[in-house]
Length: 218
Image (cartoon, rainbow, N blue to C red):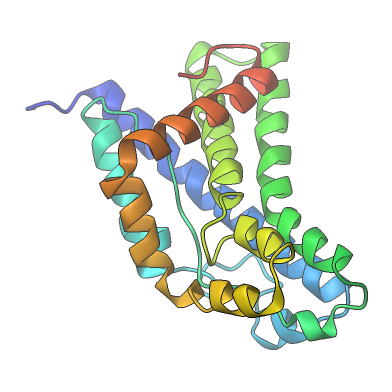
């Protein structure tokens, strides 16, 4: 069927399922961390929940993973990337700065890392059939990729919020004002500058996944 293959379609479906579960975990963890540290905003916006609707972004959570899945289906395993609607976190409510901002920022990537490690442990103990092992490797690789992607210093992602803490006040505010342009920046970084950026993401995600599973994830 053209360049599509049964294996490619199967891997694409497993990747999409992994993105959905990984994004659900990271968005819940981030909102939960902010609420625990004193910010009521995530609860008011209904974000302390495992429901998809509050965080689902048509481009970042829908079209971007779908385009990646099409590439996987034809044998081009582009590193998965996805993001949700900007989490409603108000730093003014956080009790201790900059510690609390860092904790909120690492909560999402930390959740993805934990999922990658848990899948890796299941692969290492080798109690599942080969096909399920492959699905677990895809799950670990996808969550490793989500972790690395969200630590990039792109306005709107967790990495940028930590980088902003190091900037002078005026530059910090200007940097944060780019948050609404996240879709355009992601398009630029992943597609127009894709070779270098995707290569870095691929290497880092593959390294984390291999450390977790003990097998070459790429």
